[in-house]
Length: 300
Image (cartoon, rainbow, N blue to C red):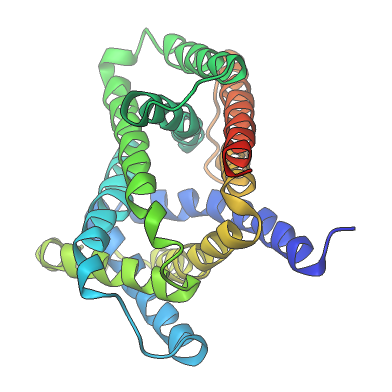
């Protein structure tokens, strides 16, 4: 029988997938009045305050070791600043549903990087998953061929930029999960991100008159629920459920994003793009499961 800790973690990850799906809606609203990196600054500054309060109560005052500072800086550059710059910039050109479907290509690219750099084995199942994922992406982009060079090609390139930076972040941060507690690791990431991006953000502030209460509420949501609490839940899930199960949950983000994009933003995607999305999500699930099985065998 599943223990209570794992059962609660499964429930929290389900809620988080919906919360992160809603994040794209609020982010797209805020990006109508401010630049991507300015939005990153505001949401991470709010997240920093929330996580700092949690940390002081739960894990004391210790922060990062001096030798780990360069690694945390690179994690912030790729995992927060780079990733969200590409993702948020892509929203100007693509529906949020298509962006998250492209982001579901992350597991396949991760395996290819493992193969190229670390010479890790690729099984037949993983090969099928990669090919299925590529075919799904081809269907999604191919349908847009008539308007591809009217701007959408830029959106797809930016979305792929987010895929690449997130993979780099995952490889860089892998060693940190065993050296820091959940809240401390999260706080360190937030501190580095805010310190790196604030000089740009302070010189690219939006006009005060253009920022409505709806935008302010959306940014508060991004900073508290999506960034601070969401990141803590995600990192905690890595410890309790493991990276494989956690990645599978994340891979279903396109489903919730498409739902909210349709309900709130009235965005639609073509049926063949939906088929391509199903293929990419299924391929990601297959790759993640098989990769997890190989990692378990290597530890036995």
